[in-house]
Image 1 (tube, helix red, strand yellow):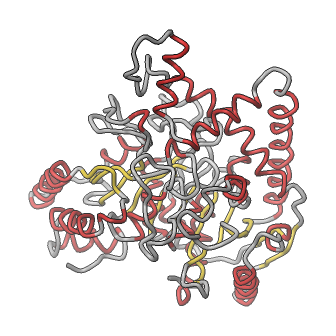
Image 2 (tube, one colour; image 1 turned 90 degrees about the vertical axis):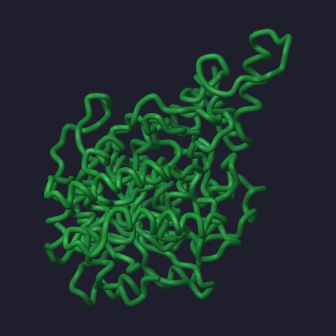
Length: 481
């Protein structure tokens, strides 16, 4: 079967009668079975997907109306609720739990006739940068199975990377869409906080979490965002701002005024070869008629500590509901008083990294430490946001690395959580400020692994962000992996 490079090319063939939704779903089901060792999917909705495909084929044959995403096969991260389907957050705490409702993003996909084929592996409760923290085993990078795919949305990234679905949904709290997109050589979009409803997204850190989109084509990402973005009565943090026509805006070619953060480009932690690649890329932008200016950002080394103080505090609060009574795993141990029952249930249900973050969050919120840590981190968040917005007021977008290195080996950083946390140095900035950011493929490292460039835009300016990304990918297409 011919591989379709985009939703547009697939749907042209679909409406011309040269392919069908059933053929497309069967193709992906065969791919998923063939590449099962990658451990991208936790559950595949085989019969349901085929039934939906057959129904769509019949409607198309009979000339009935179908939605904008008709026949588009989508995978969803295992923290996004889908009514009547399991949602585990890749944790023993929720193992076997069946969702009673669907996330707003899922409802909107289904309303436009997308086909959801399965739920995807991730770090437990979206806490991790490698997908090694899943209770159901790690997802493997399809380009090199000895390396991590990134996290926490590793399964969502690999599903698109390995052609196990057309597009996928993940969640991004501090880079969990952009970082695995970078490691896997694909596109990962984190929209503005509030652009997509969080209703039905299992919470990690509520003031940071945002559903994001993976794809291999910018137009595909724009099409999905067009459908799932917008106000939602079930989420008070969802913005009331009008949703732009993201797909039409991709067609406008123009020159842009870019800033890059010197503190990021010349940071000691950035791989030297990648730094040279970014410098070459900036020169290509200048040659293409764009403006590229270096700007200082003196708060770079403060953003990771501030991020982890705030997110672990929110995680400690959000995960308190999983106590074996109201929600979650219940210990089978007998003759326990209530306190020991809670301790045993939570100790058995949560994995090591989740426990670490709950303990950190509880500590920074505790009496005597709240002002020293949590309040200070909120002040840093304000300074970072103001500084970032000041730069964005002068430029169309900010360019910076997505991550400091290419995908590393499985197990390489599991014994050093601090090193793992510091790997988020470039991605958490957009989450602290709530602005949209995207990672797009840029080049291939001498070690054979891809790396990308991160683009950050003003709040709710996804139209410009996607247009810039579209032009960047067109310009650099010869070097894209």
